[in-house]
Image 1 (cartoon, rainbow, N blue to C red):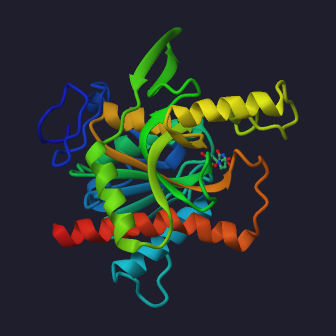
Image 2 (image 1 turned 45 degrees about the horizontal axis):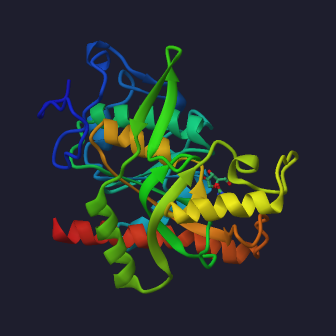
Amino acid sequence: MASGPKTKEPGYHNDHFVQLCNPNVATMNEDVLYHFSLSTSTHDFPALFGDVKFVCVGGSPTRMKDFIRYMAKELGLDRPGTDYPNICEGTDRYAMFKVGPVLSVSHGIGIPSISIMLHELIKLLYHARCSGVTLIRIGTSGGIGLEPGSVVITREAVDPCFKPEFEQVVLGKRVVRSAHLDAQLVQELMQCSADLTEFPTVVGNTMCTLDFYEGQGRLDGALCSYTEEDKQEYLRAAFAAGVRNIEMESTVFAALCRACGLRAAVVCVTLLNRLEGDQISSPHELLVEYQQRPQRLVGHFIKKCLAAA
Ligand code: R2B
Ligand code: URA
């Protein structure tokens, strides 16, 4: 078991070793992180990952590789001809890249996909005896009442009824966990956006849904059981509840990180204003540039943290 203080209550313990909320793992001789194709008996986790301080997660493997290349340049760790191999090369479920203290991991789309990845990621950090780790989801979203390309730093991750909770059925019973995020980290990230002055950034609630189409009130899915007026009413109620963007992973990300005492944040760019439409039809190059915005903000944050350390 990792050394360091034991934590029973959820909370933020940034200088502490990563802890699990599960006593069973400490009793296992081997832990196979199946979806990463990594195992404690075949990989030296402390040697491979012990220096990790920042973990950035995002949906797409390509975007997460681009992010690690960008971070290598920003941190002055880029060497001519260096490639960044996928640490999870034995599987195509998730992709993982590392440079210096930064780990970049893809999580696919939706709560089940990111949830599985996070269980294995948090165990990886625990087996590696990492301490003082910050996790940030960098992603895309649909905005509400914001200019496309705006970046939202999540104050609270909320469910489709605007509650800051994540509900899961465990052994046939509903378990509700808090999806609150670290308020101080939100302020630090907002300050980073102010330092950059490159794109509009707001702090707002992020609504997490189980689906991209009906789940987000779109009119353009294969199925639609409501009118444009119903959709507008729902999105305006969301706006009144402080929601500024919609995506598909934030509540479980917030809940799992919180339960394990990990400092965590969600930073997503908005690809469109959902009050004005449903289709994402901006030119590809513009969408690519939008998707780099959370990377630039978080890259600046990481550099600032490292300079202050
Ligand atoms: C944002 O974009 C994806 C859906 O297109 C999903 O992963 C999310 O949260
Ligand atoms: N991702 C989402 O989940 N919704 C959007 O509208 C855009 C990106």
